[in-house]
Amino acid sequence: MTAGVAGSQPAQDLLTADSSLAAASIGDSSSDRDRERERVPVLSRDNGGERGAVAGQVVEPISPVEKMLTDKAVATAIKKADTKLWTSTALNLWTRPDGKAKKVGVIEGAERVLVTGRAISGREEIVLDGKARWVTAGYLSADKPFAIGGECTNGSSVPSGVSPNVQKVHEAVCANFPEITAYGTFRSDGEHAQGIAIDIMVSGDRGWQVAEFVREHYSELGVSYVIYSQQIWSVDRSGEGWRGMEDRGSTTANHYDHVHVTTY
Image 1: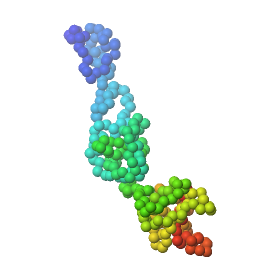
Image 2 (image 1 turned 45 degrees about the vertical axis):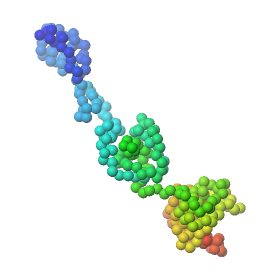
Image 3 (image 1 turned 90 degrees about the horizontal axis):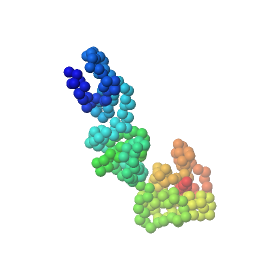
Image 4 (image 1 turned 30 degrees about the vertical axis):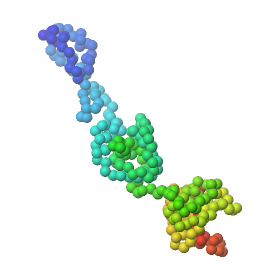
């Protein structure tokens, strides 16, 4: 009986007992041994089997991020993903949503990607080539983003010295209204002299279509204000919509034969 107790080995799911147990005398009563056994720390596991804990000790719970990144959770999210959204700009691709993430590439703007609907720590999960990747939240949209440039095929151009935003306005208008071939940029006065303004030579209803197009996409094009047909719209007072202007005396001065655009 004594040899059996001394030579027994602890089960594999038990941590090493306190050294006092090893020095227990042969004369210990069974009740004493029972009390000693109660002090043996036992390795217990949670329902998921992913974290061990010593019985009677407080164990830090698994973080929300770690729960989302278990193999099972990721596989389930990928399997259930059935929605596609557009990237509104180029986005870095990350292996996970927190500070332990590694950058593994870039996805361009105007790309349609499969999303899982999971988001945490300022990032959203997408699926690329069957793998879960994370991108900065807020840049995925159900609507296809406006392509600023497009292809200008009518041969029109603007001088190289104008601002990048004026170049954007020309490229966008040319791509979407290819019949318009005349543009005015540099001249000796005001914002035109600074290279931040452009006149788009168009009139009538088509002029309003161009003016509304530029106004609608003011943010992407870097537009400060638009003038057409004696009406002005500006970013600073956008809540007021189109506002009437004073009569300047001529068709051109009142902007009836062109859309004027000033950029930042």
